[in-house]
Amino acid sequence: MTPTWLEAHASYIDSFRTTTTEQLRFNPGSVERPALLKVPMIPAGVLQYSAPLTVKIVVSHDVTIGKTQDSDISYGVSDGTSVVGFVTRDKHTYGSGPACHGFEQTSGKALPGRGWIGELSLPKPSDSFYPGQFVITLKLDEHWGSCYTANDGGLVKVNTFNKRLMLDKGLTLEVYKDNAGEKVGIKSIEVTVLQNS
Image (tube, rainbow, N blue to C red; front, side, top):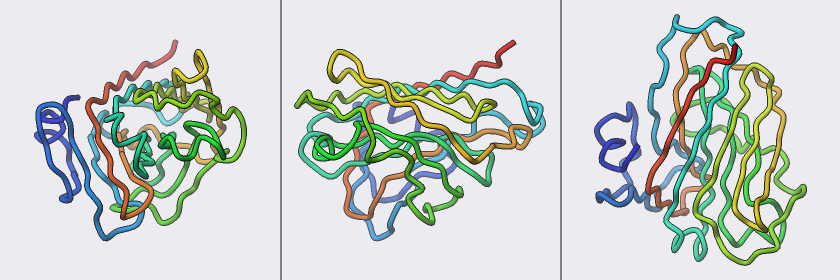
C-alpha cells in the first residue's frame, strides 16, 4: 500500500497529514493516541470465528523522522471492537526498551489508553541506527505475535495477547500514533493474510 493508494482506499484517514508519492506524513494534532488510518481487509462473514489465521505486516518509515523525533506508531488488526498488534518505537526509546512491542486495546477514532505490552522488557537494541522497516507477524488464533527489526543483526520481540478477535466480524488494518504531538512518516505498508491449514 503506497501513500497514494492509502489516500484513495482507507476508510478513515486522519486530517492532520500531507501526502506525496513517496510518503504519507502525519503531523502533530490535538488528540491523544489518534487513529491515523483504517483499511478494511476482510469483510464480515467470510471467516469462521476461530479460523487459523496469520497476518503479516511489513512497514517502511521515514528514517529521518524516526531517528530524530518522537514517532511511536502502532500497527494492528481489528474486528471492529478490539485491536491487537505492535508499537514501532522511535530511536530515542532504545535505551529503555525494545524497538517494538505489543499492544491491545479497544478500536476507535482514538485509543482509550496505551494498552502496551512488554515495553520495558528485553531485547533492547544496542545498535544506534533506526532501521525504518518493521516486520510484524500476528498469529490471531494462537493469541501471540512477533516484531522483527534489523537492529543487532536481527532482533525479534514476541508478545502474547489477552484479547481474542472475533474473525467472523471481519478484519481491518488500523494504525495509531501514541500522542498528539508526534510526527509520523509512512512510506509503505504491505499486508499478507494467510489462513493456515
